[in-house]
Amino acid sequence: MSSSFSGLSTALSSLIAQRQALDVAGQNVANANTVGYTRQRADLASVEALSAPSMYSAGRVAGNGTRVTGIERLGDLFLDARLRAETGSASFAATRSETYLRLESTVAEPGDKGVSQALGEFWSAWQELGNTPDSDAARKVVLENASALTQRISSGYAAVVTQWDQARTELDAAVVDVNATAAAVADLNERIRGVLVSGGSANELIDTRSSKVTRLAGLVGASAVEREDGTLDVMVGGNALVRGDKAHAVEVTPGTWTMGSPVALRWAGTGYALGADAGRVAGLVTALAPEADGGILAKAAASYDKLAQALVGQVNGIHTGSYTAGDPQAQGGVFFTEPATGVTAATLAVAITDVKDIAVAADGLGPLDGSRADPMSAIATATGGPDRTWSSFVVDLGVTSRSAAQRASVTEATRTTAERLQLSNASVDIDEESVNMLAYQRAYEGAARVLTAIDEMLDTLINRTGVVGR
Image 1 (tube, rainbow, N blue to C red):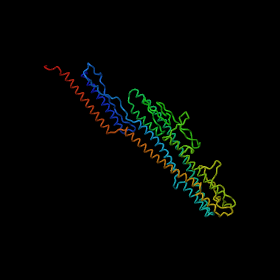
Image 2: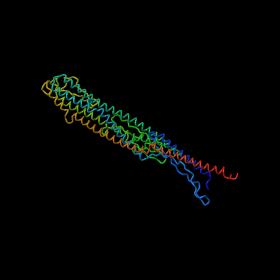
Image 3: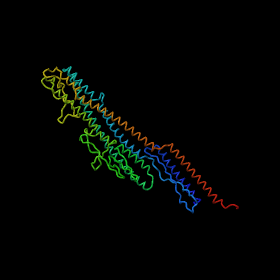
Image 4: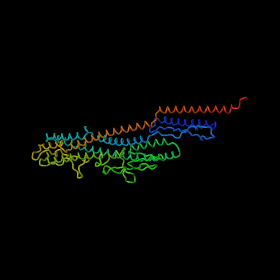
């Protein structure tokens, strides 16, 4: 037979359990606007009776109240994994799109600051010179427009190199961020494991770790595998960036623009490639890659070089076959310089300094002939000419940039959807918590009423029983 005092412990267990559950609800409400916080729930379970009924017991025995078996973190591993995957894809696409947008801003096509405008003015100057070959003013305009064209091509190429250097700096900073975040995850793994072993709740630490793993997903496309001891292994390219309380550092190969060597990611101290195919870091690597590997900036720089080579080759080809005004018997020299190391956009320059050295006369027709200016200006529409070469690059850049922007928009929308689903499951709902608090409050009040009723029963038993007739 149970003790007359057993009901006190039952009511007390309810008071304690409901108060703990109310504390959890209060924690949820307090962190309703905390970024990365995942709502929690107190799991209650009934406490079984101390003894089972027997032939000497007084029939069925009630349980001994309730207890909190744990504080559950209401996250969803599947939704977390999906968000990380979409975050990596969106970050990769956004980085590529950002690279193209910066490049388009540098190219400035179409517009008054673009190479196309300078090419058009250059060819127009040759047409005007063909009409007035004896005009020093027309010859001066040719030289001025030629100088402006070379300056625009060279500065455009330099801007691409500057963008490459900036992207390289951003990559270095991103890798430092990756290593620091990975080390933080490893430290959190150790702390979480220690808390769980001691029987405590590590929910807040797990929230912090989850946010950092999502950050790693945005940086290097990381994924996570949960272990039985509560730790997370963070994987990149099939290899562990973080395993338990150990983090493996990542480094960037020392490639530079002037060296022409590829920039790649590898595991520090091993030389093995990282294999990241998502995240901002992977997007920066594709921007910095050589032209043969589809490098965005290297391809743009090569297009500037091809433009310079087409311009120099075709203009010099006509100019060296024409005759100058200063000496009708002298053929023109090269109009643009041709360095022994080869023509590049960076070294493009006008070779002529005297307007009299501009050659537009045909053989034997004298200094007043300007017929050779016609084939010079016709280069503008020539197949394989500088205009066609540049136009092809600009069109390809526009199409590719538009495609990259659309891809970034789609992946960001997908990431937003994944985040919304994850938040709908993990975020705090104030209305729901208000209902829970009310339920816990009423349960607490009920337990207090039970405690009061038992107290009154015991008072009757102790203080009033046996006093009849006194």
